[in-house]
Image (cartoon, rainbow, N blue to C red; front, side, top):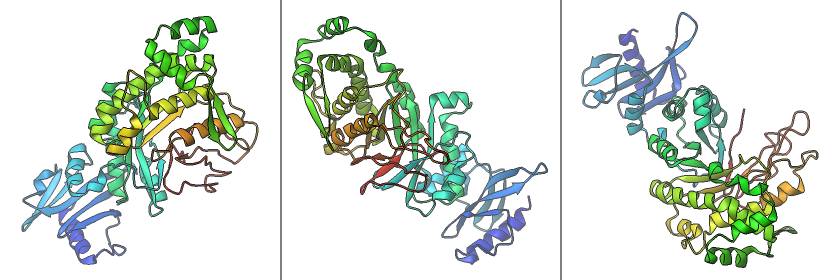
Length: 420
């Protein structure tokens, strides 16, 4: 690499005053160019003998600070140094100290956010080009532990790939990183320490799936083994109660519904509450609770019970309500997802069961910034795609294509994953 010519290119960038269309060196990826006073940073694209594009970081910075970067090659220029380096973690950290927008942030204060999980680590550039300038915040790093194992990747690799893409495309609007489907405190800690701004807590393994197989006699026996104060609380709160969901829909709890919901889900709720206290509040994270990989269809009472108790954990054994914590400390966005399996998908709109399920979240989670709806929209007709939209106020969907929305929340909407 001819560093003398590259230094000449840097001087042209400084003289261009932001207009880089006429740069003669087409290996300079112009969207990546950042100028800070007399310092210059950009990504260089060079095609090797096999036709593969190889990327390098170019830094021209005061020699007193340029040592922050790892250099493959360098050239001194009076009081500055020209550096060519690899796109590695060390250089990413050094660059992010100069440009904070290379680090993920909370989706709060953004109206529209899309999850754009890059499974292979080479699609985020295209995602960013698509949404740049459209007022959409992307959640780029979004990999579950299972996906990391299958793709032989790590959270660090996922995070770094997204961050480098953000710099390369000059995407300063803000982006998110989701530690997706983490199941243990260890996995949550891993995602948080790597820099994720959001975690999706998968409580599936904390659910007592055996309960759904019990007959009423055994269900009643196990329920009555709980602390008497808990039994009284749950019966007083739910037994034979009907909860209005609006739009003419409601959910009613029979004895079976109460006992099944408590024995199946309450342990998972307490687990989520513990993660909330230990990680979400101190690290100011966006927080999603995922229950969407259960082996059976969850009922509307199941949905209501979980959503209600995730919002207000008010049993005698857990006196602090989550919604009060959110209102007082304002630490995070909270989402709740439950599985909706075997719903009727023959019509062009979601089934009544899906709508009723989704309405639970609209009502119960009203105090949260936004809520994930549990509706699932499969392909119903050729050329159409049904996608769930996450919102805090009403059911929204994409009808019938990716580009035609039926409604967007006036305050904030999030689409968990948009595959392109």
